[in-house]
Length: 157
Image (cartoon, rainbow, N blue to C red; front, top):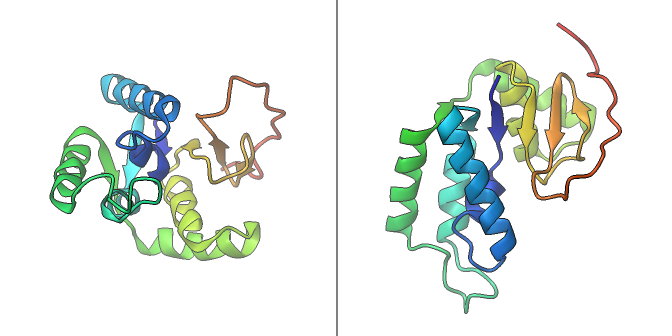
């Protein structure tokens, strides 16, 4: 089963301010393309364009990419990865996830996309590393290889 990639990984790939994260994000995405092990949420593509094209602190208020380049990158992402689009079930599940887990709204939507589509894992730094949210485990790919004390999924089915 593929893993769902959160927006920050897409952004780090084009962000030269943290070379180690940029290398890790690039390697992760390239491997995901090669073995078809990653999918994207529609929301992450949209958020990528917004984040990459807005002025950045630490870059003299310049964006990571001009809007036109960010849009080209987004088109390439859509061509390289399967993209999951929102449905009524995703929206309802996101509301329940926000209430149950206290997730911020946009994180709840990312989680709900994985939950509804039966994906076992979200790759993100915005969730608690190693924790299961419903049937979905959150993993931070930027943490050094560390042991994770995992609890079983909250529910099966």
